[in-house]
Length: 279
Ligand SMILES: [Zn+2]
Image (cartoon, rainbow, N blue to C red; front, side):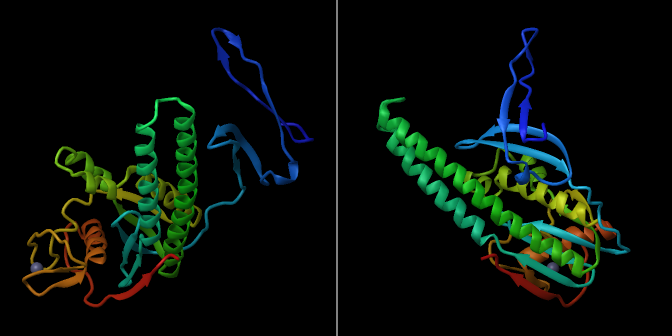
């Protein structure tokens, strides 16, 4: 990296020979402040530079003491429950609709492509359209996930949360892989969960909040009052013993109770719900 914005990218060594450098020019004013660590040339429907750097910011210092449980419900929604009795739901409406639209468009293009000769002019045209849809929807999804995680981190700060326990749906997925239907797998897309988790990790870290991935097995099914288990398909979890709770808050609270008390028990009576919808 030179003063005038010229970057020499190493191509590494192949067959014992050092490959020729790639030279890129950038406007130095557009580079982030702080110490540059790594610059990569990447491709996403066009070339771009991926730059990682140290911002010089240290994690926030605080004396927070509360814990919160997090349940990732349908596609990327976050449901959280804090010891302070506060609950938060960030709906996955936006991300869900981006996903659905993307799958619909990709399906259409795939069908059109299957009617063409592979690598023909028409096929390549559809393929370019496919790459465009993928690239655009990925950016939209990232944007929606950034908003979702920001809402959650703000809520953690309001509730003076020091640590969050996040139920790990991937654990469940591995265990039951053979039995899972296509529909369920779509709901727990690995990409979404992985991205959401990565965003949560670095945003929480910046605020000095710890994140633990925990086993969420049976947390959505178990009644915290009588320990009976049942599968829920409706919005509310309703048990024969009289316990009733919003399905997602129910899961988040069980995750928290399991970590705090070693069992799924009923933490507080009343929960002040705070519903959020990401526009
Ligand atoms: Zn019960």
